[in-house]
Length: 268
Image (tube, rainbow, N blue to C red; front, side):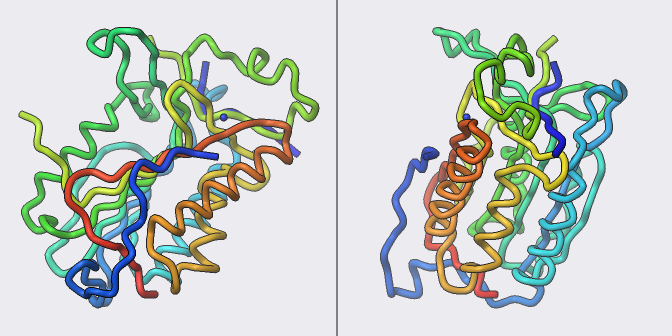
């Protein structure tokens, strides 16, 4: 089985508990067909072929199937991070999935440490927070849930493949999604699910896809009709932990909720 780390050069954090409510006003409306617009950006190939993300095609295929067939979104698929904001007037929800290499530099001073960035195919970077801000300025998305799913490393560029896997018992199964680093609005109704915590790597099975995206597809396919988003993500975190342990690795996803929010059911 092939391997890779989503970083070209690991239970997870959930910051907000699920709300228990039977009050319809505490739940997002989710009745439109389609449910809304979803965008999948999977950056597989880079100017430097050594950085190509082998196996990410399985994530792209399975995520598209989940969003279209199970969750009833209209899906746009792109192969590079040339960000466009599709029309959202007629849907109840927006989903953005970004899969690429990433980086987040650590530092004791927040003002000087590097932000979490995603790499485009030409090696240029886009800050994740900038992407989230862009969607929070869309008038037709105000009051609607905006879900961001980010598959990428957040590790230091100095963490090479050999350094990360030097002591584990099954090297060669996983790769990582990390890379080397060479007017703000306040987000609301925003859910951000990231494959790993700051300064850590995300693992990718080159024959099956990434642990995080494959866990989402599996859990949402099985439980998406009965659980709210936060409860689903708890199961995803458990699944990622199990998959990583099978490869003698560690990976902890992260989920954050921005601003006021309601309970999110996809109602497939």
